[in-house]
Image (tube, rainbow, N blue to C red):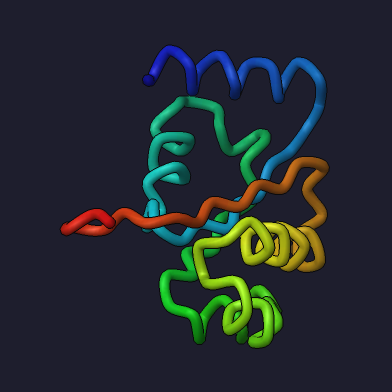
Length: 106
């Protein structure tokens, strides 16, 4: 995995693309992988770990109706999360991750 992350960081630098993340089920794992690469700070702005529904609503501005109608791990919620991170980040590339993980899986 580290080779892939290094390649991603290299390509982001090469193309002058910066990155921000909104993570849920990964609990910040992707941000940790990115920041383990020397020089990642040149392209990585920040990550928000919005693990609870309340944090998705408050910090990423995911509409509560999206969570109630489609669920917190839905494509619709993920789309709202990426829009939320894009609205508070100046990064050219914004990614969101949601799903079922945690200690017991799903």
